[in-house]
Amino acid sequence: MISEASVVIIGGGIIGTSIAFNLAKFGVKNVSVFEKSYISSGSTGRCGGGIRQQWTSPMNVRLAMRSVELFERFKSDVGMDIEYIEGGYLLLAYTDKEIEEFKRNVKMQREEGLNVELLTNRQIAKKFPFMNLEGVKGGTWCPTDGHANPQIANIAYAMAIKRMGVELNTHTSVESIDTQNGKIIGVQTSKGYVKTNVVVNAAGGFSHEIGLMAGVDIPTYSERHQILVTESVNHILDPMVISFQNNYYVRQTMHGSFVMGQSDKNPAKGNDLGHTVEFLEEMAPKMVHDFPFMKHLHIVRQWSGAYNVSPDAQPIIDEARNVSRYIFAVGFSGHGFMLAPAVGEAVAEMIVYGRSKTMNISNLGISRFENKIEKEHNVV
Ligand SMILES: Cc1cc2nc3c(=O)[nH]c(=O)nc-3n(C[C@H](O)[C@H](O)[C@H](O)COP(=O)(O)OP(=O)(O)OC[C@H]3O[C@@H](n4cnc5c(N)ncnc54)[C@H](O)[C@@H]3O)c2cc1C
Image 1 (cartoon, protein in one colour):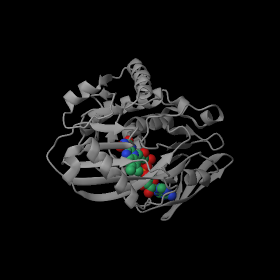
Image 2 (cartoon, rainbow, N blue to C red; image 1 turned 120 degrees about the horizontal axis):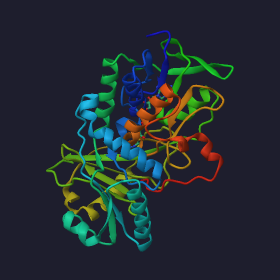
Image 3 (cartoon, protein in one colour; image 1 turned 120 degrees about the vertical axis):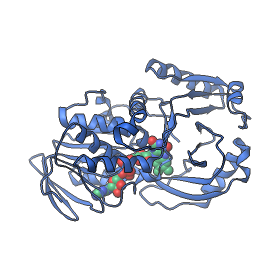
Image 4 (cartoon, rainbow, N blue to C red; image 1 turned 180 degrees about the horizontal axis):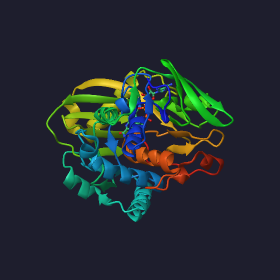
């Protein structure tokens, strides 16, 4: 382990490794990543893999659109096939109110340059004749949304950064961050001390605790979300389908399994990753109702992971006011995987140039919570 690093990144999930990848691409030497467990042990390895640009907040739309550009070239840029499929995303609407909201969202998304449209029930039935659309009034459709394998993507970044000279320390936890006169001077890890002047908090579900290590109170908390996977069957479903009303998302992986999840009514707070029978009892009937062919499908595994939630369900990407060069990229809620390529690029630019150049992400700063916040609504 090196004793002095130009940048220390805490967290080897998709966000930490994407930031390291982009720093290495910019030619930054002596970057060190610390992951307290194995690569993809956090939320990234527990994630649904959806990549969606249909958001209600323009910033999330822009970040996701930039990420899609980068996902499209991920294989050649990062060097691994991550099962990336642009199968689209179908968002279902059940009431006139929801249709009106979807119309407003589509207008804003199209203004941002996204290819997205509103579909009628009949148009959805024509595209997806195997769905039971009872009660569905319409939906929105974006063909360049899609999905990929998050574990492989995380491992792809990890292998790439090692090739590019980044030091990747797995099974090594950061225990404290030392500061002096508002500046970072080093971090204590379970395997030794590293001097550094730049620390990035990419600790996912532990972002609040890692913030406090440097005296920074980041308004994030973790919340348990459950998910399941079925046996694999012949391919039928290209897009990810979301119903906010019925509270679910579902996709079929390249290998034929269906991955699906919902938000629990009272999600457990913290990083307790247990799971419940109620989740299965709620998911199964609603999925069989909307996708009758699932009636005979076997569930093979259920698990859970943490959404690291911010007050407006948008990421917090900023440098601390009271500790210079303490940067955080946290609070991704249910959408950190899909935003990771653009976030990695933006944070690396903040470190190298002092500001993000490709995209203006200044409205993702922590000070936004001092004013009235605009919450992202399209979250399951
Ligand atoms: C059930 C579920 C479904 C989801 N579905 C989607 C989806 O479809 N699409 C999408 O985009 N997003 C989805 N998400 C959200 C997505 O998984 C996260 O937003 C994303 O993985 C966050 O990445 P991260 O790198 O910030 O966090 P993580 O992957 O959690 O990585 C943070 C890492 O920091 C490490 N760490 C913590 N403390 C320390 C320490 N002291 N020292 C060293 N290392 C430390 C942890 O071990 C962890 O590996 C889902 C999440 C869940 C739980």
